[in-house]
Length: 410
Ligand SMILES: *Cc1c(COP(=O)(O)O)cnc(C)c1O
Image 1 (cartoon, rainbow, N blue to C red):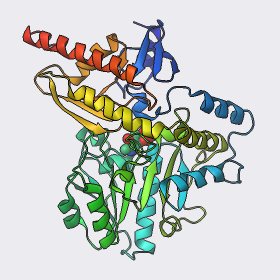
Image 2 (cartoon, rainbow, N blue to C red; image 1 turned 90 degrees about the horizontal axis):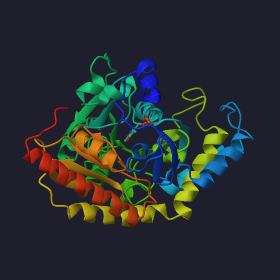
Image 3 (cartoon, helix red, strand yellow; image 1 turned 30 degrees about the horizontal axis):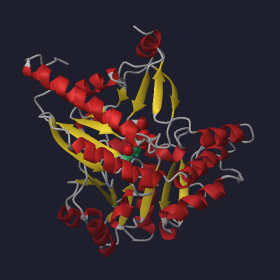
Image 4 (tube, rainbow, N blue to C red; image 1 turned 180 degrees about the vertical axis):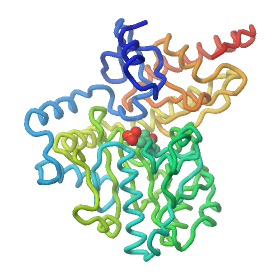
């Protein structure tokens, strides 16, 4: 066994089951393993590496800032945070931004803001605030967040969970309408469910949800940690329906593929519930993170990565739709967030990902049934052709294997 793998297996927690490849270098859409093999990265770290690996402009900003000033805490102002927050507000159309580090922290921030807004502005009775979430959601891994989940594995063994959350089916407007009570603070939703298998709701869903939330004085909070930053072909996925949520969450690609940077953005009247000491983070909004994240926003615009995600996403979607394989159940997604769902009874999506790895294409399944295709946004059509050819080859090899009755035991 590779010594790196051995050390991770021996000394690490087994909370992940990585594919058997040891990566050592990355550049743009490519990564290399320790034996020198090159791969096209179709995962981009769950969309955290939308700018590509080690983007030279962002690495330059990172190294310059790291040698100047990196971390000061929020006990003081810095000459980097304000410009970053201003740009974030301009791009999202929101009034204010609160910087955190990981996505889960941004979600926790949203939950706290929504509850306090409910008590102080909406006048919900103390400790009665409710937050509505969707079945199949993924918002992170803290206790409160897995408490909102409907995925048994995420929850099992981690209770008790904080109360005050209600789950409704995703994509069902009527369900939202009937779940709302006078105590409802917020509806927290992903415009497209990423981890659940790239589930795209019916057209007009978000717009209808926004109208219902508005009518009932309920905050619409869009978790755009995976769908934001141009991933779906617009800066925010909610832009596709012209929806301006009451609050937005960003993370993952906000750190330019270099650092964990996240943010909670909302209207003045929501953010104003926070007073000094209510909430915070030692590293949130540090000068290094702020400089890199501002750079990540600028690069997204300067290099037209958002429009590229739109056109390349269309190209990838069309190419995948032309594949004729009995193994394919559905191709779905928006922009460069695409899922290829595999019919049950054949090879698992996981087995197909292992076969793709051998052909130099890196990706991972979600839930064993969907192959996730979410490359860095600057992927070229030539590179997409290479990936689709590899997928076609793997599907036909898999078809032969299945026909021969060699169904692999996993
Ligand atoms: C990844 C993700 C999160 C959690 O982000 P972390 O940085 O892993 O904590 C939250 N919401 C969505 C939609 C995500 O995809």
